[in-house]
Length: 423
Ligand code: PLP
Image 1 (tube, rainbow, N blue to C red):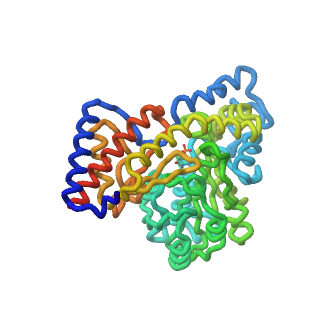
Image 2: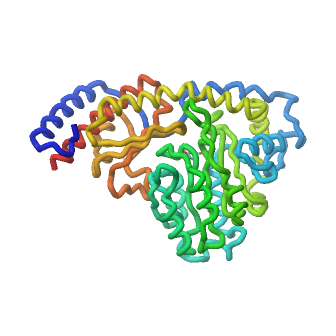
Image 3: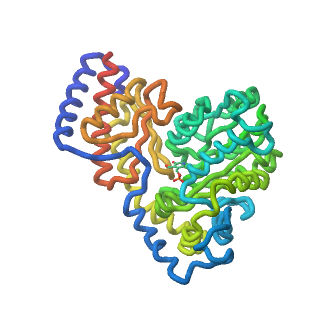
């Protein structure tokens, strides 16, 4: 039954019924958190073997004694391993600390303060700087831009990547546009995977700014939900083939592979960009946590070790995603009041509601004890102009908790939408 075609009396009946269910749920005193894409403790347990894998008298490798300072761009063993992980050559990678977000932030701050290869100087001296932001997207990317005073231009996200007709037009016309955020595999929050044509168009498009950068955040490179990791064309190779070798900066980390707070992050790029980043890094570090890098290499041994580890993650989280889909399907399907994604990987389900309902759903759910990511979080400056997109993060709670939370979510959607449609 399409709610959009119902008269006010029928909508009122639906609203009353939903309000009764909502009252019942509110009395359960739930305390559930579906806000952030964190791994659950069962997932973290999978990597506990990493903690004891490097011990006394056992901290040396090809690069010497890893307890000491030095080896700014990562130990050779980690460069080899993570080069395979990122599908690049070891000389094209910097293996860093525990956070890829930190590396992205540093890369952009470095560009603002000192410039990047191919550019005319520090971005801060050039007036307004703009980034393209595919939406819905990752709130922390947008937060970096907001913090650094970079103007954000939202671009619609399609099923196979950002709307490239718009991206090409904007990037060709405006030299103040210096970058675009991309989460190419199992995108946050829609779960979409960039198709070859999008990758090639990003690599080959004409850019008014000679120092335009693609921030290629491959945070979910191996994070499938049972079907094996999807493949995405390698942006560095695509750029090389298109004659734009310095255009892309790739990032990744093991935050959702091993321990989210104690993983290893990396950046891969052209020789020019690696040399530039290394020079900038000299001032802020005398070397990364090499012991943790060694732990990671020993723990996985090789790519097969990593792949079978990620299969175990999928076994744990796939039922949580299934619970989200089942709830949405059984409570909301056919009512034309919500559409949602069914990702093959990543950490999120993206839900689009009737315009003007997202904030009300978050409010109602919060008051019933289910914390959701704030409405608008998936848009620059927290402003979803249609107030309709919500991001569901099912990995951290248990399956039972996800089921409970989704029951609340669906009642809140019915209640908020019936009220909205009634006007
Ligand atoms: N990039 C994306 C797209 C993410 O979703 C997340 C975490 O949710 C991160 C980066 C954070 O990565 P890290 O833990 O390596 O800083």
